[in-house]
Amino acid sequence: MLTKFCDSLTIPIKYVPRKEAGVPAPSRALAYETETPIPDPAVDPAAWHSETAELDVRAFGARDVHVTCTQLSLPLPLEYARGHWIPFHLAVSCGDEQVLDLLSTPGALDVVLDRQLRLSETKKRASEARESPPNAVGHGRYWPVRSADRPVRTRCFEGEIKVIAQLMQSFSYPRLALSVSMSYLSRKC
Image: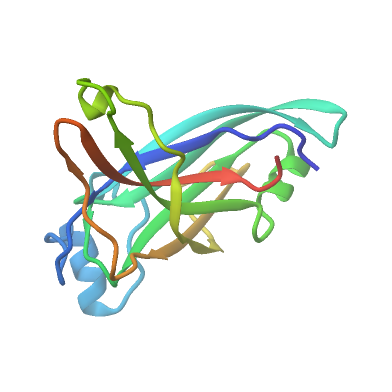
């Protein structure tokens, strides 16, 4: 069991309440047309926005382990239509095979679509105001995939998260802001 893995990685996304999202990258559009898998970020990095984090964890209450690469990738452009699914790719690397196996179990990681409100009660701009806690408005589902272009001690997952039809788009007024982002974190805290 991991005793310290509470870090998370967040990617702000542009959410607009449309029935169709922006034009996908050519490789993703071709995959949709031919009903083939979407090329992953290792194969087509220009079609994905990827964020990476390095984490130190205490595994099994006994040893410290460095998780060298946890990467969350979202397809470009970072805008998605409500009522539809956002595909994502997740890669986790670690030199400790036992910890990597633990992080690769179903449900070990939670991919979340968050909504966050900032309200300024003074004359400060909303961007400078205190944030409300993130409000999860969707949870992703994912499954393991093989990736030939990844290092040996890396596990890859593909998944998707539903954008609820009632989700309001992000906005920012001088004293009020609403943002939507996707993040992942470990449930093993």
